[in-house]
Amino acid sequence: MSIHFQLCGLYKGKVSNYFGLTTAINKSMITEPVYLSLHGIQGDQCADKRHHGGLERALHQYPVEHYQYWQQKYSSKSLWQAPGMGENLSSIGMSEHNVCVGDRYQWGEAIIEVSQPRSPCFKLNKRWGIDKLSLEMQKLSLCGWLYRVIQPGKVSVNEKLVLLERPANAMTIYQVCELFFGDPMNHAGLVKLKGQTKLSYSWMNKVEQRIISKQIEDWDFRLLGPENL
Image 1 (cartoon, rainbow, N blue to C red):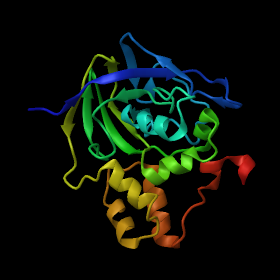
Image 2 (image 1 turned 30 degrees about the vertical axis):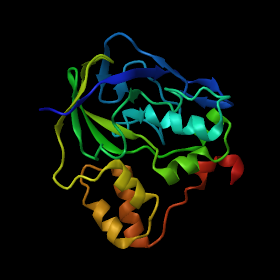
Image 3 (image 1 turned 60 degrees about the vertical axis):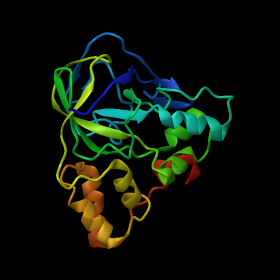
Image 4 (image 1 turned 45 degrees about the vertical axis):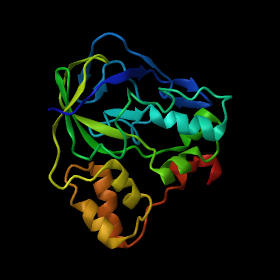
């Protein structure tokens, strides 16, 4: 029996001035079939192409279940719901604990492959008005994950994600986060991460640099933003 998951939301956004930022984090629902290219969903824009988007970060998926945690922790004043984290795909039943780096899914005509966890950034703090939301998200590994597109094609929120293959030595998104963020200079952990051949180039490059330099890259700008440095 194949492993498959039904999506509950598909979203795209345009670059605009939002929450004091130039960003495309404010996304809207797509109900009709749409073309998925190697760079992402047709019509979905990206404001900061250095840190977001590209071939290995074409799609972002975030579990619906996480919103309940944030709602309980930070009050009911905000409406914690998708696509509040800037995700393209929203799902129930998929999480950092059962999705692995390198997982390939058939989605409509397209094939997508998990490339890395999402690296939380300060724009989420601005979006929700919580100074260190990105830092907490990273500590808890409630990050979601990103995809590269292996085969472009028409996709739809009504099409299930069907797991096609998983690497033999696959690590879950949670396991990758726990090493990469939670124990970043553990040499054995870095060696283990280096064995994840489907891990995105940017993450793999950081793993290799840590092994060589024995130093961790600076996270402050990503997590806290320029005004808090």
